[in-house]
Length: 421
Image (cartoon, rainbow, N blue to C red; front, side, top):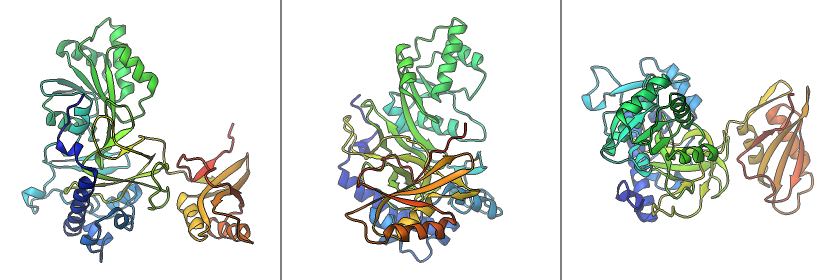
């Protein structure tokens, strides 16, 4: 497919970067004025000075647990002061949300009246959805926004939508047989369940030829299983908080980052960007004025892919979902967290990379901090680091120096190798 959703997808990368960071400065100023939590979080920060990736990296990462805490703490503000919209007669109409959702946590998310508020149209277009198609949307329509997210994206590309929602597998098959949708939207596992139910009922669905899937992993085996049935599936990656983050294209080489976000990959437990290609936590800044999340830590691991997409889309690419960044471990009755490992490394500038390995069986826990350093280790370094481990974690641990580049590039800061069987 050589078509594009819009001209933004093929911009000169330097022009895109300039436009994104010009918009970011305005977004920060907007958040300071209209989102009370950001006014407090960014007190004293000159929004105009945040005009580069280096400047952005100086701002704190917003973790989901902080969002949850603020939503619980701010009476009368379901969004914890992070949204620029809400509800109530005292609000001007332009700042009234269309809907409010509640995801597990519970975390509340606003829905704006803006067309394609979550920007999912771009992902659906890349998956082959076009005006005139009928899309069978099997994401949930209640409590969480997944169904609404995808429906607004389908509307942006001109599709008609059947709001199927989840469950009721036999009724879903019957609806498909009657309405003959061109495409499916939902989780890949549920699509397989529906197709297997169709086989059981001897119902043929030859008109279903495309799928936009998300919400879970899309393994190669399932992708090929669908292809054998004439269905080409593409995955998208997004969240209820951020909307679309990245999407798959026909090239099948990673996921292309959406045009409405700025993506960083940081070392888990910190806000420090890693080098290109290194696995770390995906941190996303959205340019959505209604819910201006700035440096939002997704808790997901990914890495930047070098170069541009072969389809001609010029934005940054990521490898997709590579696991979770929240790698806390309980050692001898006490939790150890990635930020503690990061603090140990900060106190010893000789450390280039660090990985805490927890090993042992039953109650015999052992911690070893594996580190990479440049050149020979200064005299007494391991002893000093051992003391820092005890100071920060309140636990004893050893230090093992590894050769530069030998620690795995998998984003793990804490590796738990203990056996529990």
